Image (tube, rainbow, N blue to C red; front, side, top):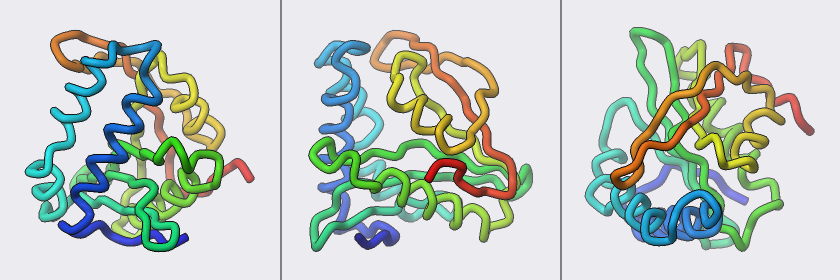
Length: 170
């Protein structure tokens, strides 16, 4: 597996992985229509391209062979020395292969090199696999907030990992 910074050529597959993940992960949480709308609201080709050109944002992709099978989207603030893992999505057909962990490790290493001291990760409260993912790697639950998806508010957990960024789970 290779993990590398995304390029504009990856935009379409990033959108596909996001949409597949939303449809797979949220059928009990969101209606199919809301999941599709959210994926297309949060990940349009224009938004992905804009994120690729921001000075304080990064999208990393994981490749198996020549196929992109997942991505991690991070941002950071040098002044407050805080980083944010906005999304880690793995194509549902490639789950349980260590791709999420590898993307998380790459994102942590990248943020560490930038001098970030604290990393925040947000997950819908009802997304048990997503919450379990961060908890198994030593992220601590910090608080619960609300996020808007479509036209509705959903509770979202915020997890925090402080420097040094070492993953707890094997």
